[in-house]
Image (cartoon, rainbow, N blue to C red; front, side, top):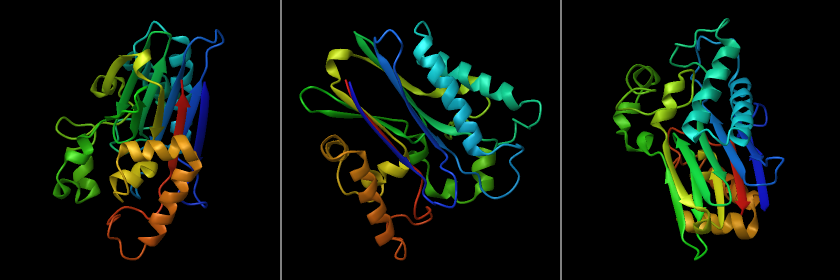
Length: 262
């Protein structure tokens, strides 16, 4: 197995809210990839004493342990238990019912000798490359399908869309949200390599339209994860004044890429 992992903050003066990890069980059989993108809350009350990096570190740690050791658990069960464990860590001090309580997108992939399992919740991405070169994106596109008018204000999102039916879902404090994730299993022989990316890295395809998912995967595979992030940063800087592509989005976002060749 060969892996490549790069993660960097969008602003060097702020902590990176992403989490990334590659887990390999002591048995040497199989492994997993975990990528979280912490949701930066709008300014104001969140009901929580803790930061988003605090949350993603704890949720990511729980997911790593459970994904590697809990081979008898499905990935939704792994996510559900990890959310519950993280919630228990601060339920006594924080209002976990607040719509802006710390939360994150989730991308999980786990492989064994016979299969590759996956789970995607919210707008990070998982790309699976077959032996014939075909790249299949696994996406939770509920947020992207919402009309722009529905996302006009943070208050509107909080009240009607965030972790609501008809809106979009993230990993926050409610374990049941794990059932809303996009999940599946493919034979191990049909996956030669995979890449998990937060939306700060997928901007190359999703916002700047520089190439499709296959072209993005080729950059990561042939030039490395660092090369993709460098290209994204160049595009962001060039668009910082015109805002032709980023519009209301921040100029630079936390960006993470994990590549694994099975």
